[in-house]
Image 1 (cartoon, rainbow, N blue to C red):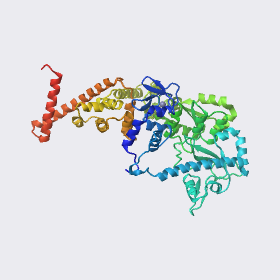
Image 2: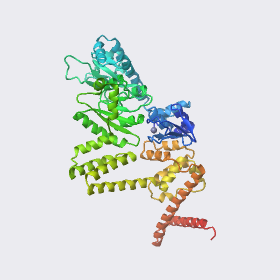
Image 3: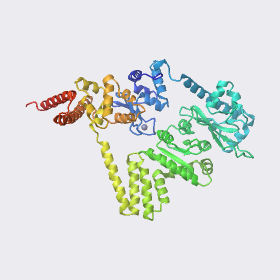
Image 4: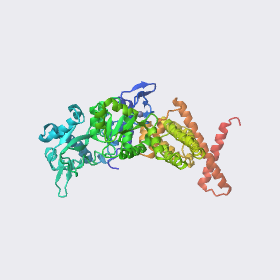
Length: 600
Ligand SMILES: [Zn+2]
């Protein structure tokens, strides 16, 4: 495919770079035994659970389960695309990335994107300059002063001013047809039917929205207070979705929080930019805001990568409570052990900005710490809504809660939540519901047991991932996958696929091997197996164990196939090829038997 990076190049590149160096230059590592470790850059922690294996060329965090190759690390840590991560690694080695067909796909698109970042930066500078210099900026400055904003915080957040008028930005930075077009793409200008453009943001206080690398990717604009407000103008206006800005992924203030805090104790999700900025003014630097959308799964993942506690701050009214319940449901799959979510409801008529000004930082933070935890809020909400004095209400409660709790990841937290639900069931009612929940408990436990026992196929794949070199040694003994192909076991296709790749490329590292399944369902399965603590630390013990597992699988397929052929031989329905296979198997079985009983 034209524009693709050849697999061979990716293999070679991963062989050439050392993941320890790649990570160490960004996150300083300490050597610990055979591996290297550090506090995880993807979640907040005090004791290191992030480990890097030089052998496997693979990183893994026991806390948040982040894992992958050097390419995967750069994609996650620097927020690069797959080709960009490869470009970055290649650059560090002083080599050029070849593209099939000679060219990187859509170099135009790439260049256009660079230009967009550049233009957004210019727009950012323009608005900040207008706040300082424009004759009409006084209303904006007064408004910010009234809200108690210092020049320092305004600067930290890059707050600016878009003057009234239809073409201020066009005149300042959109003075060629190309630039005008790019500004439309970036969402800064709106194109009319007659082809003419005008500024999207007019007479507004401007809040630049920055990505994780601090680049301005969009804006939020707040309308200025007016004597005669025009109802048609929305109070807050955001950039539309653009190639740079996806509002379901970005959080206002996240970059600034990371800049201000070394260790992020918690992140608090509030409603608007002004709340974030006002809280920062009171030295509460951990607030972020979603941008005109409810909290998404992407948002949550991003938040939990940086901290272990997320606090949602809502208005105490009906709309706030509905939003909180939606946020709670979104959190369920993210509630791993070690994470906490809190729900804070403000008194009527207050927003975080007005509230902290009224009660001060200390009292505000006390409220944060006292706010309802995930389990408190969930069970309170459920018991409030169901009439638990009656059987119907209690049944409804259990029926509502059970599928919700089932969405939580396996772990102690989830277990405790189920226990709590059972407790509510047992206390409030006698047999039927309690029996149901006990049955669920048993089902959960047995599901867990199957999960921990490793099938031979899974074992074989895990050994291959931990030490890809065993494949070659195994093949060198004259063994092959011929008979295995007939064995219909879960995961067998994947095992054969891994073996086939290692037959052609016997020297692949763990990470290069896994890279081949990037973005496929098997990919995450394989990275999980690769990250599993090896039960066999010794490399020759692992090789012996691998051969034993493969031999067992082979024997199983030989036996099955032999039985099948034997049964059909009795009805003489074997063709020549099958007859030959039958004889071959017979011989194998004979050899195996005589090998196990050398005295006979
Ligand atoms: Zn982690």
